[in-house]
Image (tube, rainbow, N blue to C red; front, side, top):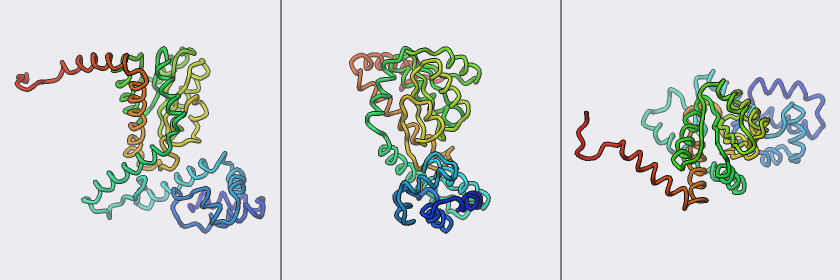
Length: 293
């Protein structure tokens, strides 16, 4: 338990119910990693009910257990950086690591993240997302920083299928586009943390304008989820520290799921468009025997 969270728990301890104090006592002595905390296990280990855990985290000011755990992970990451060790979802990296071990750690972690993403996707939400893309008159994708590469990949794939899809790198143009969306349009927000200010604001504007909203994120209870008609959450157990490496893994998987799903749902029409655009791109590639410059 990091010092900041410890002080927060101690500040409300006197106002807690006896059962909630049992939860506080357990957490104050907890020496494990924040990412390993699960609601069911915490209730069992502390000897309390799950509703007691939820009352406890709300007494601390959090809306739910996942938001509380998210805060723990963030603080844990800060402390590790101060100590010269970085938490990179699933393993810790420091100067003591052997260079030849890193490729295996990266691949192993990526596999676990993809497996967790698959378990986190609800079939109904996925189907609704595919249908929303197919129904939309136009699609605008909003993202910032590391999620831009994911947004660009999604836009490219949807353009290959002949769908009207755009994205804007300029913040002011993002505002203008979101404000001018209508009920037949779809806004897609991509944010690993779900707290990126610009992306959250664009989804709020798009919903206010009457557009449908689809959100791709990694934290189900994040801020951006409030503005999602449809939410695709890749995981509920990822770390923010080091997200420049791993945030794209699950995001790209979601993009490929959507692309394949859209193509599958309207295969007869979209496969013809895909063949046409693929042929167009192929003409811009060198062939064997072509002279270069």
